[in-house]
Length: 239
Image (cartoon, rainbow, N blue to C red; front, side, top):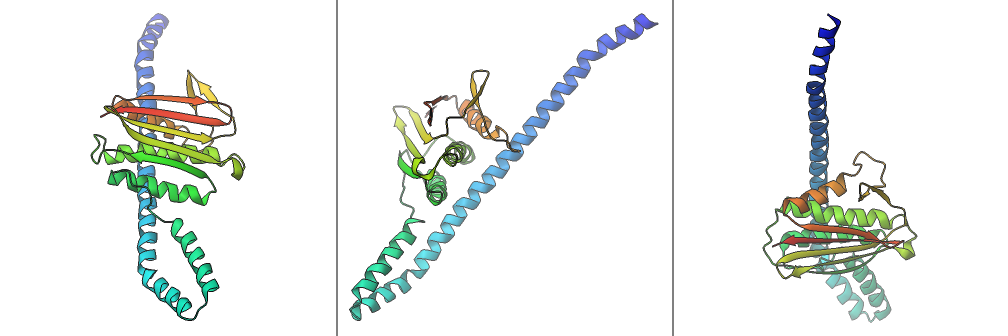
């Protein structure tokens, strides 16, 4: 009887392990899906916020012109200069200055850059791509959004004077080439030959996973490298 019980247990263990493995995998997939949905919603809110700011500024433009005209007519050139300076500073915070050739990428980059500027992070951005890309808008948002979010979070760990992000996006022969370099505090975690997140939050590592999943989906290639206080990511996706 004991031998029969042991035999049944041996038969049951693989099935139980398979069930546990399936449950864990499904749980992780659901968490990643929730993270992607939250991230997409966050990006949409950022784009909408930028649009509202731009629309509001344009709505006030007539009033700005009238005020400047009044200063000019009264010969108050110093007040006019001050007003122009303040107006320029205000406009620079919302200006959709980056135009890549792709409307979706414009929306993602400009909304992210408006947030990055608010955090005293210097930026050097060059981006020019075809108007049509073989990448779904959601996937493009997830990949670019996560790349810039990770770079921004790394920058926030160093003093303001050391913060910078360099972004280069272009067509390289028949590939979409993306290069992101940012300042960092030199603290990195690696496991299994890969970089791991250093964040201790509910979204633990999901950002890196989502980037890699999108790249894998489009049969692309990715490298991550660090040189002390500088971190760089390169991505190639076939067009």
